[in-house]
Picture 1 (cartoon, rainbow, N blue to C red):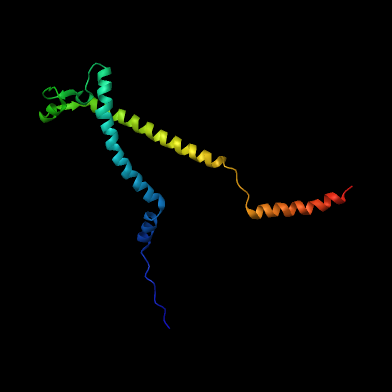
Picture 2: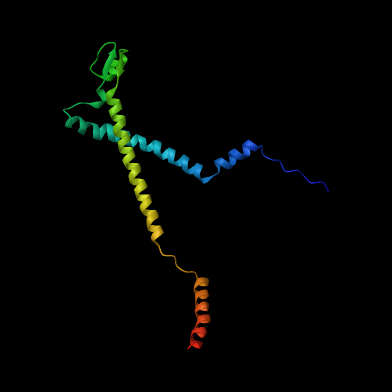
Length: 152
């Protein structure tokens, strides 16, 4: 009776499927999606909470409109300068990006620190002996007992 050949996946396609189905890739994809959503929260936190406080502390400077016109008409706001076609160096946008990076780095640090403390707690747990280990220990002790009783 002839055997029916099983269709094989091409090498590259099979490797790609194995790569995608690994747990690490799926975890990474979930992390990227959550990170992208979290970026919006951090941007709002910086723009709506921190920038007004920092701007007030340094004399009312609005970082989002802090720019230097390199070429073209000088306008009061960044939007107006952009609409007028001016070439600008957007220092305020850079400051916002730095603040967002510091906040994200601090949050990642705190998450890693929390996860590290969980791993340390797991390492401190004392290994509970299994039933077979307890029985083997009792057998060993019983075998040693007659030998100790026989020695003067």
